[in-house]
Length: 342
Image (cartoon, rainbow, N blue to C red; front, side):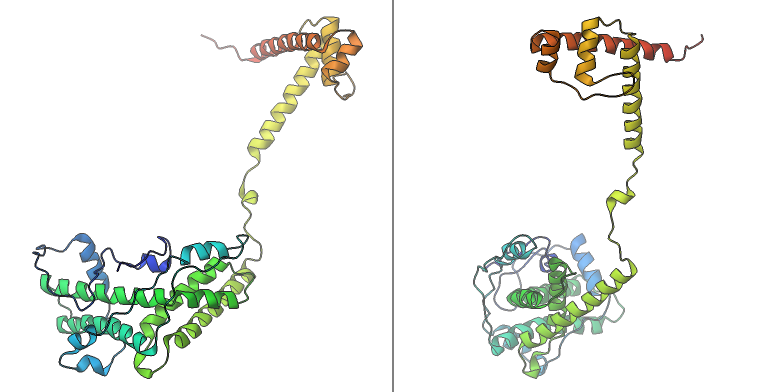
């Protein structure tokens, strides 16, 4: 059964490998001929795995002569359905309202958890054994593929354990009262703490994983809250993009408008556009232009009542007068242009 996706940008999804086996027991040799060389992606993963010794939780089961068969022959645990995670996260964000949890949750028994953790840690144990045999030497093709095989198995069970316990993160996040911390950031910290708890949990001690994971998640929330508080003390003012933006263009535009309005006022008052008396009257009342002060403008209908014509006729007179003013402005602009000398 294929594992449901939980979202391309979630921390758990980023930890998935490009390929995932669907076998229920330890991988068996494939009949297909393997490539003679590792791909670029495989070499990259192999380099990451070999950077440091693989950490794992030891168990007496690993020292049995048939440990691999004994561990991976145990019944497979049902994969969790986490399709509810992304919609629920969207609903729990601020101003989105509450959401209802959908999907089938799985409550594992202590024995089922032990089976999953044995399979997970045995795969990492096998990687550690190969690392110790290699020492500082580089692995050949066969050893490289064996390391990649066990690394893929370990990641698969790590992901299954984490996805089975995703609800713990949301439950702890809702219980934690940190109004100054964004809820999505809190859940992200909780997801990373959950993954670290999977790596460090020792199933041989007889405790439930949820007990250990909840404490780890709450400690992660506390550390995140302290870090955020120190940041707020150092930078008490929120970043305001408006303060970083220059108002030069707005100032220049306002100055240009002001100068243009003064030029138009001068043209109308001095009648450099050769306006008729009616046109000057219409412009004066429509735009409130006077030598000393501005008056509020009148509507077309109101101006029509003053000069005794319809508002449509006022519009025609206004448009003709504005055209004359525009031509006078263009003429004045040409007069102020510098003359080039040949």
